[in-house]
Length: 255
Image: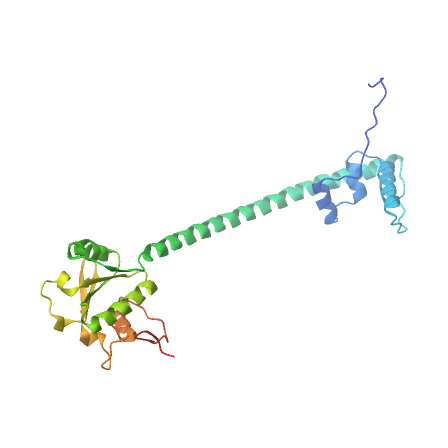
């Protein structure tokens, strides 16, 4: 309990982050930072000397004590330097904060744009499988679906090798072009009495109706029905965009 005397504050060398920043940029000295805390010049020097002695890093620096009017002047200069630096620092911090807010706004805008692009891309990558359908599913799976994407339908017969070649190729293309819906249906299931002589044939639908019909004349090149010839036919129909320089043949790529 106090007995009427004056309690002496025990000072330390600890400085604030703000003081550290000022010292780092040479705006105030460490001594000035300590004096601004309320120390006398003598107290500041004593603490600094003690720290120096404890670290055993004597480098010949002498700390001089100052008394009277000189001490008051030094204290006033230190306080003024801190106040001036605080004003400048506030402006700098405000500028930095505004820059960060601008950066955050740009980052949020970029993130929103990328998310929209990713959602749009995901919306077009909805297929990827080669699916068999029935006649009663035609309207939903072909006409209706073609309002959002190209629908490619292979009419096949198990007994006709050419339709099975088309079957194999479209099965591969379905996994590569997930924005296109690839379907298969037995020719006589799709159209009763459809002649085998009109096979192979591919129906391409877009916007609810048939866009084109690719028969053997469009699907066969140089007398051969291959992955490349079928892919090119679909490319000419506007369904696919083949990779530049990629040459595909029935069952694989050319070396």
